[in-house]
Length: 205
Image (tube, rainbow, N blue to C red; front, side):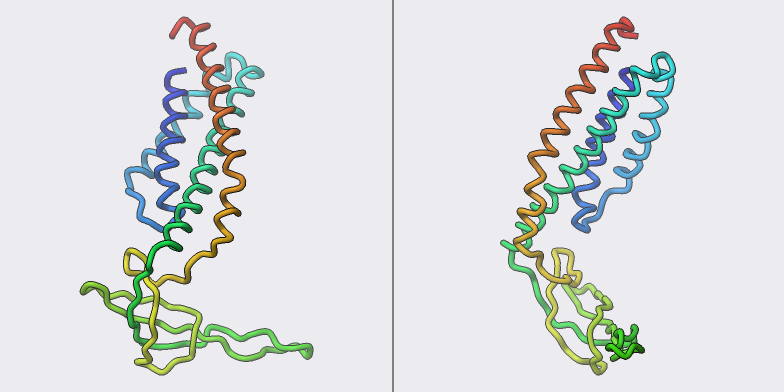
């Protein structure tokens, strides 16, 4: 039981710590992914012998534990989206000049009522420099001649930003938060009580 509880808590904490930066395109330390993988393997391995002793009763506890993990991770994801939107909207994004190094035909738009294909679409590669570091990215824009200059918005790491998020995303992600928090706390307490009861019944073994 102790291994089961520890693996559940570890997976919830490590998964949340990895999900927050990942959902905002921030780097996640590699060891954190390994910790999540180890906890994800340890959890069913520790639960299997327990479930074999009382399959019907333990199935409910396992379902609640999975529900707790999913709701906890969903809560972190929603909170990260709200925090990221507020941070980007209240901040002052950096901007710089980028140069076009080349464009290519990326496809064609659908034709009108007569079918067929319409105008060509293009993708251009832009290059810029931030603090002595060179960056490049391809965007569905153009066509532009080689060397064409445009102003681009940058994120905190100097990469081209596709645009600032809308304020409408704040209530969109915030409204479900009270329900996911309540569900995670409810299922977490229920699962903990089940594990505690089984621990005492087993004599702490």
